[in-house]
Length: 302
Length: 194
Image 1 (tube, helix red, strand yellow):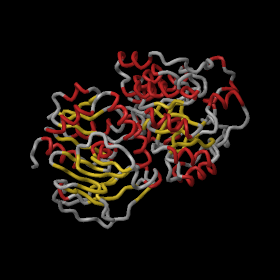
Image 2 (image 1 turned 180 degrees about the vertical axis):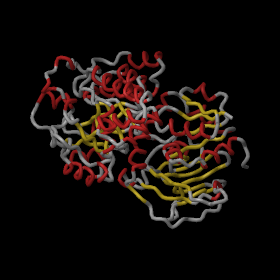
Image 3 (image 1 turned 30 degrees about the horizontal axis):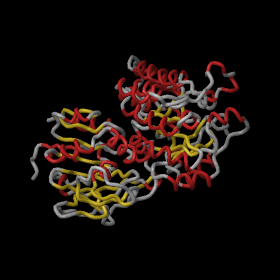
């Protein structure tokens, strides 16, 4: 077949390729891992990506102290161990950590409330990076502020490291309800809402037209079982992050595979029953309602 | 005309939206039995290892091979890897197309890129280049007889191919506003092209 090559330079780092990778992760499971061995278990189970960490959120909770970006050596080892995308976390507002992660070559940066925030009033200017970012949200305003800053993927904050799904459900439902409420607004009201959210009206208009966020939206923060994952998918989320829920459970390989299958077949209760059977102990967890205000990671970064 | 999009994992929604803009009856395909009544199938982009596991777990391989014998099938990105007969550093799965591919051939996400492509078979009168969106994309390293290369990068790397009614692209037409590749596939489904 005839082909005439076009002499146009290729362009990398566009928003299309940043948000596009998240689109390719839809319907998938992203697992927190702290070692090459865990990363291989995740890939083998069918995870679409891994989050390379020093400690999972449940351990950050238990051990306390300042939680920072992982050692680049740990991240590089995990990148070499698997062929699926590797994500890593930087602290909220810590653009130098983000620059380091970009220099290492990670595929996605999670500007995460799970780590100790570095800046109490500003997030990273994510437009300045070629690497794409995912950020957490509790409501529509927070999601759109992160997108306006350049985030190419959104996730619920939930309450990481608890194994309690209640906060992720709250955040997912809040975003859905607030998007639905946009439909009823007049143009003047929409502009007022945008001003209140501190985001460009165009972004609110686009969200109203789509009836969903303009980027992929994953569930995160408290998912521990295949049923949790299916619940979030049925609520309309595009995929799930599972943190402490896998490697704090009795049989990580089986549980990881079960959650992957539950996300792929989230609408099929018979399949869900099958994959939920005999998985052994889930992570024991802590009820999100029992946490004091200082223990709530979701309140970090607005 | 009814075209399905394999909906186990990946960029399913975007393909469905493009097909529906062309007024095609587009369906998510989540179970083997949902292949019935389809005239064509798209294997979307996603993570090829993840989709591969789900295909194996759900006993999809033989039914998909049978489907491809007398229907049009189009694989984008991960779909190209799943359709290829040879995968460097990996195992072939469906082995539908006589091509060899290399996964993540351009490097990690930071190397993902856009490049306009000249695609002879889809060009309209204006001959506008097709917007190529490459995300952790594979490339074609060898093709067998009977496989036509449809598009190359400026450096000569082949990134789209057709063998009869089997179509594959290393890039993502579903992530652009351009409907020409989907219209081209619909023509293959209608057997308008030999």
